[in-house]
Length: 170
Image: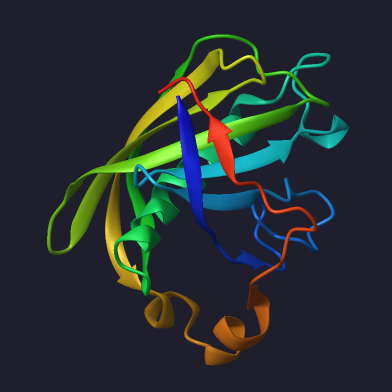
């Protein structure tokens, strides 16, 4: 299905998943979609490898964890998710050196916790891995404890050609 982009989310400097200055990171760019899901675009490189030409399972887990955990920002912009539980299913090998998509959404919100689901898919929309997770809600200010982070390292990066929509398997 085709989903329209509502807005792009911020990146940080050193986060492993979205950090723009982390040399070993994935440099994932996140987009909020019209169906209230969060989509990340990324490409693995050699340092993310397990078996030849396959992304390491821990990297896949980190991607899904980050994506579902930050999907709460769509509904509660000053809240971040801190992982309480994450269940992974690896369905097919995840290739390196190919642009991939990671998608997460919230399935249940309570006062102090939320739950969500997500998947990683390839350019042909084959779902390669899935997850479910439970997260504790925390204010950004309680997590970073340094307001300079929010002002200086949690940054909006304009795309040279902003995507208007994405085709996703679900």
